[in-house]
Amino acid sequence: MEQVDGTTLTGVSTTTLWTLRNRAEEAAREDSSFSDPLAEDLYAAIRFDYAAFGGPSQSHALRARAADAFIERYLDRRPDATVVALGEGLQTSYWRIRRPIRRWLSVDLEPVIELRRRLLPDESAVEHIAMSALDRAWMDGVDPEDGVVITAEGLFMYFEPDEVTALIGDMAQRFPGGELFYDSIPPWLSARTKSGRMRLRGGYTAPPMPYWQTVGGAQRLLEIPGVEKVEDVSMPLGRGAWRWAPIVIGALSRIPAIRDKRPSFTRITFGKNQIR
Ligand SMILES: C[S@@+](CC[C@H](N)C(=O)[O-])C[C@H]1O[C@@H](n2cnc3c(N)ncnc32)[C@H](O)[C@@H]1O
Image: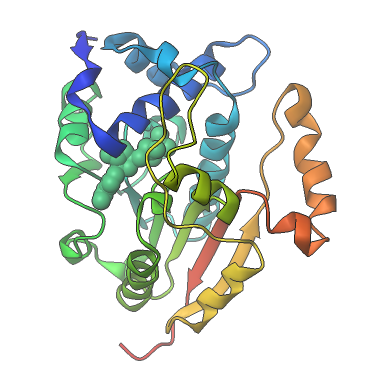
């Protein structure tokens, strides 16, 4: 793979190097069950001061595994569905999910899409769309007939709350029978980022993340027309402490005061029978 300069990415787009680094470092570990050789190659190809992100964490590999499982579950039922990865960054999910996929749309901002086009293998099923996920034009190219499965890993927290609810509402109208997976941070973490206090050990300060969601509060999304079901998705089991942490967190989550303080993964189902 050719060598490229990661400093072409700025603002929120720089965070895609943080999550790529974490997935690649996790994939390279012998004691990890997360495998992603393409992420390792990408990481090696992009020159950047990765130490600014502090030490690696397996959290982003676990999030990727949860999103992969979500996509696979949908494709098991609707194998011809279109997959849409919003804010896809340098994810290599298409290559990790080793099964035929008819259409995979990758939506991100221009500088990120430029890196994807340069570095990732050409695939007839994968289409790159250099556009904000908030621009509804990406929806025009998606035929909902055979199903639509959408992921937004590490994206919604960077949006304003009303932007997220409007986007979910529009997806519900455009993609009846579709499903959406995304991750959220709790209010205390959002407040830290907004005050510029989310500084990683290596010195990188995470951008403000205005959108937060609690597990309990997520049920309010059912008020959005077309949203049929809102479910909390558990974190897959990882290694070391993360072998047990998801089980402990799941048990403690029966206590709302604890449940609503943790980050979460959400699956939303859009109703089939809605007025369009
Ligand atoms: C934390 S990174 C996550 C990247 C990738 N999803 C992952 O998990 O590795 C955030 C991503 O959101 C993208 N992004 C930020 N604002 C966006 C927008 N308005 N529309 C689409 N993508 C956006 C950034 O360019 C970046 O790739």
